[in-house]
Length: 207
Image (cartoon, rainbow, N blue to C red; front, side, top):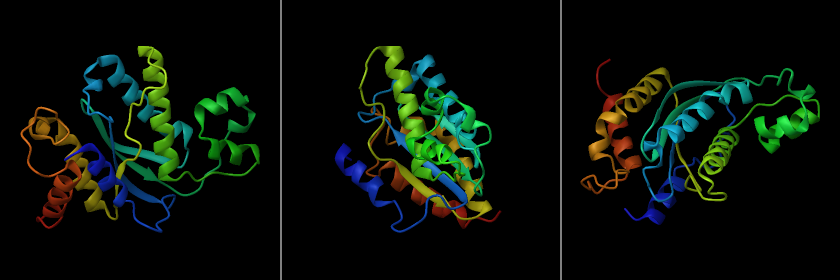
């Protein structure tokens, strides 16, 4: 599938009118814009993993579930909880706040309120922070690390979370046939379409 069509497909999956700051579980996929195997490099893979693990520090109402770094994309599950205060952050310097928080979250803290971070805030923080650190390491300032959009699915119950978690944990074993693999045999389906088919099949299997 050509790159532009794939990006449009991801955009179309954002549920119109849905409040993505609502408590719940979300499956997220981010992909390198040219599908280059960027994360085959250990240092860059480590950056992708470390920034992900730091998300709950930046967003106190967020917990993480399964996560995997593939050669040119990442999958993860974000668990957004109820609104919580960003304890202790208001005493930090603005420079530190700029590193730790999205502009929206910083504005809330400076106003003395509390923050409930939505999925777009969390993804924006992750993409911006990983890109900045990767480009700093590679001395490639301003180079795109991620596609402009991202793909997500709302996981509406524990069974859906379990299925998504299994998908993520097994993803490395399916790399040879992964649509994001530039040398894989094309199946005619994007990864999102393969995920939808697999997800639907798994949900109806006996537990």
